[in-house]
Image (cartoon, rainbow, N blue to C red; front, top):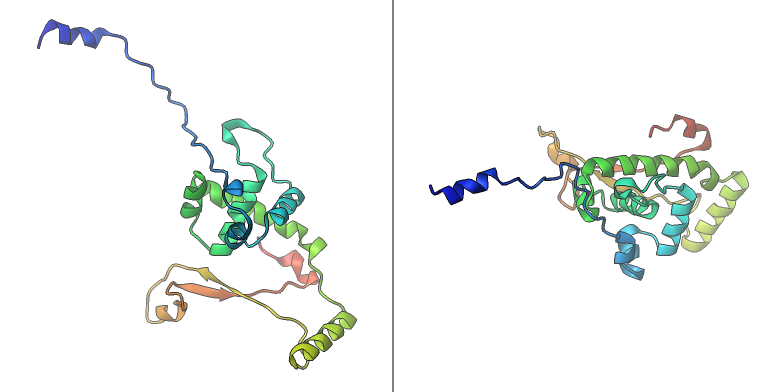
Length: 190
């Protein structure tokens, strides 16, 4: 080894920052328009903005590239719409899956808090009118409403009954539907 190559050992080293590297966030609100947006988030852009304002999700700080309110709402809506894994949603916006988890919990709680103001069970007179409308439209007697449900992905525990939980799309799930009556809302688990 020559002396010239040893001289580089005594040169001062570059100081490397040990701070966290926070990646730039992807602006998912501006990424899609019109029908593309509605397909991905199940709402129009106007409705998403209105809900975001109602929920007051804006961060109280701008440190560390805080996630804005509309992005938080869209992350949660995409989770609801697709049932996708939190890691996949995190990759969509360049955030960790634990952050996605916290966002989904926060937005879900805020939506549940607003439920009393926006979800009303009909009284007897309204139920009668709705039942009459259903009968006029489709000939269904004594029908007062329609309900949809969703498949929630689960991890198969195996065993002899495991295939009972495989849905028509090929993954394991539980089919869930729910109606909350006003007197039961206080007992809802978030």
